[in-house]
Amino acid sequence: MEQPKFRHLLTLTAHLAAPQMIANTPIGGRKIVMVIGGSFEGERISGKVLPGGGDWALTRADGSLVLDVRLTLETEEGDLIFITYRGVRHGPDAVMKRLSAGEAVDPSEYYFRIAPLFETASERYGWLNRIICVGAGERLKQGPRYTIFEML
Image (cartoon, rainbow, N blue to C red; front, side):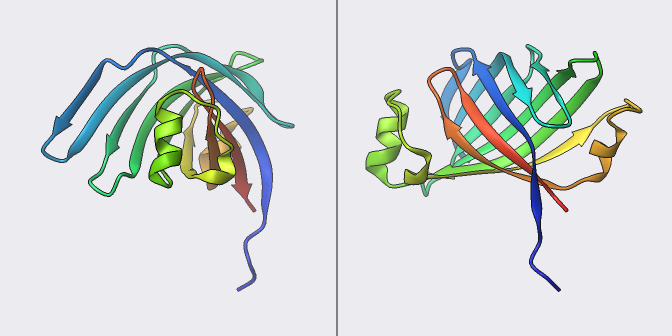
């Protein structure tokens, strides 16, 4: 089997509200953060991130942050797309402390990857229901930015 090929699908930037909950639960440090907006742009699809989505993130004992995100996207044409993704963010302690303090940190200094799935009733964007994607993230002041690639 040949090595998989990828093409850029979109870049998504999410704007986050303050966390609703930060607590140490029996399975790890839970943080619930609502998404208040954002945008996405690609060669074949662009639009905005609608308010109301969220991230039910868990910090594991090994320090890794596990993402559980659900968002609604609205394309420029008005089509609605549900996107869900799991992901992992981790790095050296000093780097992660800088991220937590709100500092700008080069994404090459930490690991931040996601595996998004799309769901839509749109005929125009129905092809999204049938693709597999991966993404690389970076943490900006207002929230994360992901560069998402379709696996060909």
